[in-house]
Length: 426
Image (cartoon, one colour):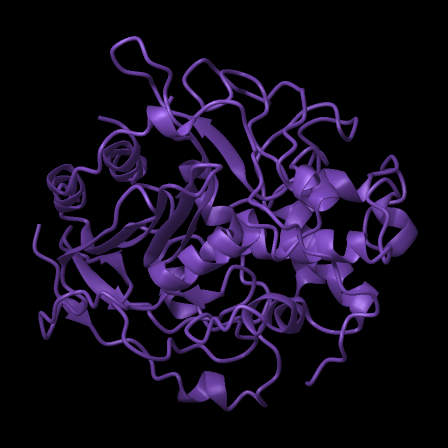
C-alpha cells in the first residue's frame, strides 16, 4: 500500500487558545495492548529522599551468567523487520554487557531523511513510570500514605458508592477503576487527526471513565492494566504539591539527572530538536489510505518527550537508587500475588500479576536448559509513536527503543517482541 502525506491544519489556532493548559489527552491508554510481551518555579521538597548506595537486586532470576552475548546482527535484523505500517525505528542497547545503536526507515516520509540516532519521541504510557516515581518520593517524604484511600485525599473524585481504594492500588494496577471507551473520546483516524489539539482535563477523563462498570469490585484483589488509576495518581500529585505533575517530574527527576533532552510539556504541542515524524493512516473514499502528520499533538497525559539515551539515564538512576530510598524501591518492584484479570499462560505473569508500581516484570524463555533472562520495564504508545525501556535488575543490559506506527498505538506487539528477544536471548 502506498501512503501519501496529507496536509493537516496549522497548529497556530491551538497555540492561540490562550496558552491554557492542554491536559490529559487519553493517550496513556493506547499502550494497553503492548503490555502483553513475550511469554511555574517550584520550591524544593520538604523532605528530600535518601538515595540508596547500591543498585537494587530486583529479582532472583536473570543473573549475569544468563545474559547472552550481544548480537548486533540480530538487533539490526529485528528493527529492520518492521512492517510497512511503521515508518521508522530507533533502538539502543547499553550497559557493561555491550553497547549498540541502530535505526531503520525514515524520519520524514516527504524528505526521506533517515531516523536521527539522537531523535526525540513521545513516551505515551512510559510516563506512568515517572509518575509512579514521584508518588513514591512523596510517600518517602510522608506526604502521602499508600495505605490511605484515594477518597481521603481526593474526596470528590470517585463515586460515593465506591469502596475505599488505597493509593497503592493506583500505582500497581489493582484499583479496579474502569477505563475510557471508544465512545468517550475521538477514536477514528479522521476524528483523532481533527481533534488532536483538544483539551481534556484529568478530572474530565476520570469522570467519564467512572461512568462505566468496574472490571472488579474489590480494590487490591486483582490486577489489570489501565490508565485511569494513573490519571487519579497525577491528580493526587497536584493536590499534594500544589504543582502540576509535569512540574514535579521536571523538578524531581529531569533537572537532578540533567536530562536536557527529556521534557514534560504542559502546553507545547511540538517536539523540540531532532525527531522522527509521527503519522496516522487516514482512509480515503477510494479505499486507500493517506498519511496525516500527527507529530504535533496535545501533550497531555503521556505527553512526555525523551530520547533513547535520556530514558537509559533515567532507568540507570532509578535502579541505582538515586531517585528512591530502599523502602520505596521495594515498593516499586513489588508485584502483587494476585490473579491478572483475563490473564493466560501466554502473558508475562502466566495468569498472575506481573506489574509493580509502574514497571512490569518479564521473564523471557530460556535456552539450552538455562533459565531465561528477567527484565523490568515499561512500554508506551501515543498516536505516531511506540516506545519502551527495559533493563536487567543489575543494569548489565538496558534496552530503549521507539518506532513510528501509522496505525495508532499498541498495534505492533510482534515488533516489540522481536526487539526485546534480540536484545536478551541467544
